[in-house]
Length: 211
Image (cartoon, rainbow, N blue to C red):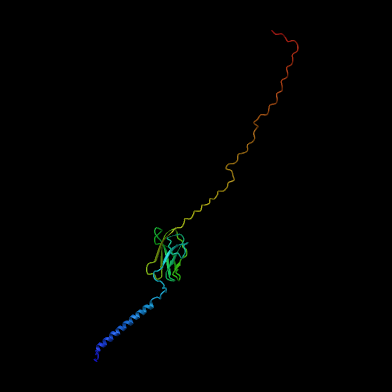
């Protein structure tokens, strides 16, 4: 039988290749293990971060859980959803054309979201007009969240002004006329009765004979 002869240089080359392949295998296994350790477990929830969340303008009669926006309100509040847990919020409201001087700040406040990333302000009031909300929060990467809305409350019914009656005057406008003295009676007293004429006296004797 003829023995296989392998040169020492070839043996060294094969050993180097084997070592390199083993090193690559270990490197790939390490990266896979690291990625597996950083990946979230199946079914586990991760806390959102960044510019997530939204804010709505709500009429005071709208439920806090309602995520619809109310662009026309009277008394209102601001309602935030799906922000980071316990995130701090700073908000302000400006007049917006055509109301007043655009950019004039009329309301502001702060708010801390709850453990679910939700939160809302107390009820707010503003004169009728057009306004814009700016909602800033810690950790934001972009511009503030914004909402434009109108405040439109019914005009109050004017209360009629009561009239004050003037003083009651018990005096007469002119003095009463002096009582008149009764004058003589206007009817004449009856005339006394006229006595009857006496009966003619009978003539006795002979009457003279005339022509």
